[in-house]
Image 1 (cartoon, rainbow, N blue to C red):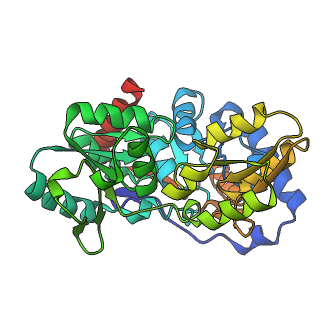
Image 2: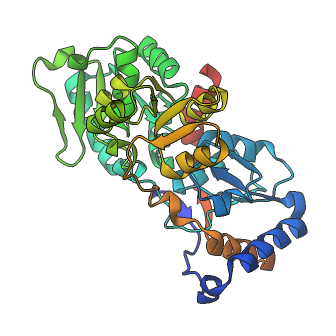
Length: 367
């Protein structure tokens, strides 16, 4: 959660919503949706629970959903079924007369929380002392509004897992080095694919405020923030080895937020949309082990009964923070909107939004 974003009153959900039956909750969502009509828009991220996704007006990744929200000029109320940074991005891109809500304010992203603005400003100051004006910052869209704003104000841009290679290529056309926030694995995998050697990559440790690198630091081209996705980092070399041994013919497809060794050993790697498209286009009867969030894997299993699909990690659990939003919280949020007693509204301050939009716009113009 961005410390510089204004979060409306974060109340505890009333007990009565927890006591409602599944049927009652579903009927209530349908009722409010019908009553508010085009004034209400519910975007749902791929990783959300099925009980919530069934009511989404659109599904997709965080940036796509924020863009769709901004394009939907009829939508006065945007109830974002995702996490904090996604709702922040939607608020940044939407107009003044549109209001963005997050049904459960506990829905965050551990990766985004691994880079806060104070840590980033300290890191930038120390890196400037080492490398001068040779660094351009890039941040994954899975970051807080304040980090996006920092990057935007320093000439950098945001990246997605789909356009990361294009954005890193652009960054190297601007400066000699890049600082990649907050996911070290996406940064490492992207730079490696573009020909940057692992020996040319260093890690910035925000907890110890130091550069982790052995050797001549002048060789460093990519500075990776020491952050990661707690879901994707749990896919391991052992998972790949076990899958290959048990299912020799099975294809392994993973998200680039996974560790370098996992991506290297997989058959394919790409964004969430890339994974979905690959499974949809795959031949009937084909076998797949997928290295990404469990709600999505389970949905792909259900939607493609003609294919043998498993999680690359058989013990993987759904993302805890992504799973915060459920039907009771969605109904509570919708009730508050209908009653005019709005809560859990996300508002990014104007100064932060302005600089963050610079970073987003640079990416959109390039990619």
